[in-house]
Each structure stands twice: as C-alpha cells, then as structure tokens.
Image 1 (cartoon, rainbow, N blue to C red):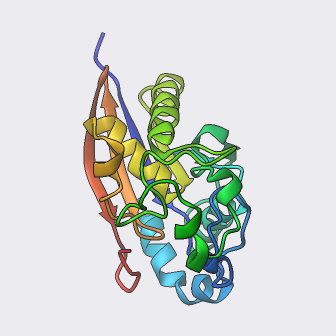
Image 2: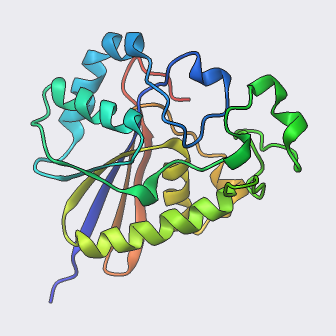
Length: 212
C-alpha cells in the first residue's frame, strides 16, 4: 500500500487584548484584541488563501483560537466544522498564571528563558514545564496523525504548542525549541509520512503582521 502523508497547518491565534498581555495568562481564557483583528481583515483573507480546501479544522478549548478561526472564515475561507482538541492547549503555568510581568521573575525557581516567560524546565505548582508540553503535544500529534491519516488538518492553537510540535518533529530539547519565533496568525506546516516527520515551513507571516 502507498505511504500516506498527513499534513498539518498550524496557525497561532490572534493577538490577545492589551490588558491580558500585562500578565502571564497561559491557559486562562483571555480575549483577543478586537481592534487589531478588525484592522487585519486583509491578512486573514491572505492566510485563508494559503490553506487547503477541504480540510479538517481543530481549535483548542480557549476562545482566542475559536475567534481566530472565525476571523479566517469571515475573511473568505469556506466555513468548516470546528473540533476542540484539549491536548493542544497552551502551556499551563499553574500558580504563576495571573502574575504581572513585572513581578514574575521574583516567583521563579529558575532563570527565565531569553524568549519565554519561564525556563523550559520550570514546573510551577499545579502547572507544567515546557518540556512537559513537548511530550503532551508530541503524543497528541502522533494520535491525530493516525486519526486523520492522509488528510489536511488545520490547527488553530498557541505559540508554545507550535514550538512544541516542531520540537517533536525535529527532536529538539525545550531550551532550543523556545528559540523559535512564532508570530500571531503565522502559519507553520509539518507533515508525517508513514512514521517519519518533517517541517515544511515555519512562521510564515502575512505582510503587515509582526513576526514576533
């Protein structure tokens, strides 16, 4: 039998509300920045033109991913059913969630990563480390590849999740994976062919939308 390729189109959600960005929010269900979303209608249309039709569409339990998918549909992509995938939710920072950015450093046990709020190895009380996220997301990607074998799967998710998915594909450690840039409403494409994974592209951005 021919080897099937499962294609994942990973989209980071829209920019969140400015007030939410003052805190470490992780798995908190914060709102998106409505003004920015309204100003980027053309960017959502351009993103939608890059996506396969038809495709399976997945979002996470957090409303910012649902709103992003809805914005892509509103900009011209044919509306599709949305399935919620809990295992692709953002990193849980546990007891650190809600901490103002200015006070976060004093609550950490390890020095923060240069490009992430915490060290890849920091596991907050009632939360998970980024290394844990790589294991969770990697397991989910393997399962989803089996479930949707040979299909195109659009996943609207989170920056940490996309970094973790790339880490799984390339067998990167958490410290290295957190050095990947994943901009809001950027597109990252990965594939599984048989049992083998590859990264097709990472952090494809739309003109006028910042890459970080």
